[in-house]
Image 1 (cartoon, rainbow, N blue to C red):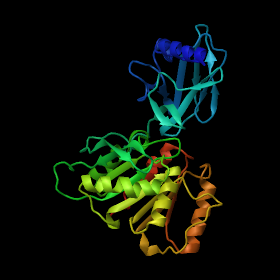
Image 2 (cartoon, one colour):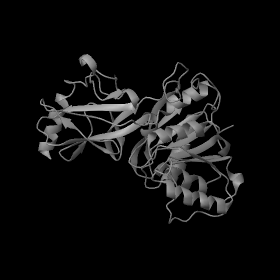
Image 3 (tube, rainbow, N blue to C red):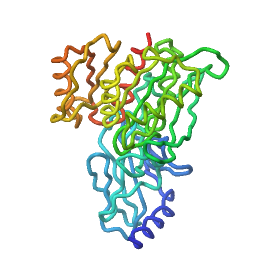
Image 4 (tube, helix red, strand yellow):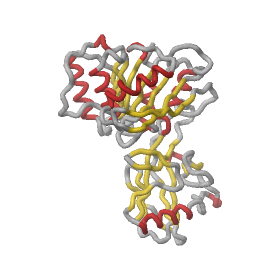
Length: 355
């Protein structure tokens, strides 16, 4: 383990000395927005391909893990390189695999995902698609709120988005409680998900109602209890909100979708809107009975196509909803179980609630 850590430190120091060369020795493409300062890699190439390199002269084998493994090729100077196939626009986790050790790329910013600090690659969206890009519009803000959880007996935090104009207004706002997935934490939606950018753009275009978004830590002994006992009271005592179910929505991705389901279905008196992204009850789970459609204004379900790992569970859940007479809207888009799908899901769900 000690030798591995020393190797990774040396690998870090070696980065930034080489670049991916194009014609006439000039760098090809553009540096990833998630590359660390002064690094020239990773690079985004034409056709949404990505180029990676790392100087590791003592390594025997280096691979790129981007959901699939790419073998990297070593040159005479000990620099390992590879170029990916065309990638879906949006955010993707990735790792370097150095002689079997799966590590974050020191040339990239790191994000908590997959249960560890992983590297992140942002693939640009198509020209003209500005839904998930920073725009010249009024901006809200994301703040960090710390609190003590009596449920977990631990100090925790949540990130809270307030819309443009909140600080200068006396208005009250509805609240969306938005949950991250398994292997992630309360940072996921604000960092990987670009929640504030999505909402700023939607609000500026008049497509979404200005709202507060609460992104809390779903890694709890009992999420529903913590939500009801800790999170909602903290928000409603410190922010100008519309109290009551008409002013509350809950949504989440993957594990967070199960959290949202469990909280909303067992406490329909608290929420008027429910969003379930790439999620569904386990096929062996028992769905609560007694649901009627009037308890929710919107139940919106999304899935990243048949390649989404939650696809089968979602089909089982929707069948149970059909049996219960609970109406819902279903949206499917290619992409699997990934952040491009979940950004799209938030973009669409946010336009449907509190109207």
